Length: 148
Image (cartoon, rainbow, N blue to C red):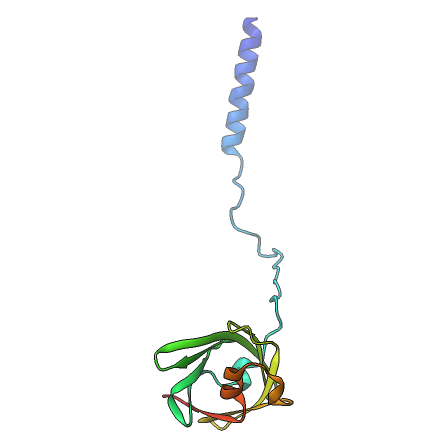
């Protein structure tokens, strides 16, 4: 029995010695590690390239306008009040409203032109088909001026 205890203690001591003297496992990834690139959930839009962003005021009303953000969101304001919010995307020279908080039907498209200062919108199709008076007021042959 004494020999068994000595044998077991010897095995434990040998195991601990070998574990303590063994090389450590590297904590960094090897240089040949596989890199995975996750594709974006949506194809990039042409917002940054073609469509101007920032604060724009109506040419005939400096207190009414639209703020177009780089992330594809917009806000319509009148004075210091925000009266509508929504999202948009751009395809070439066409601005497409994709959502809004006014229950107006979407998507709806407008051709736009921007000369560096003036942003002009015109309906694609017939504006009388749009049941939203506010949107017709803001986008039917309307010129906005970039606010500095």
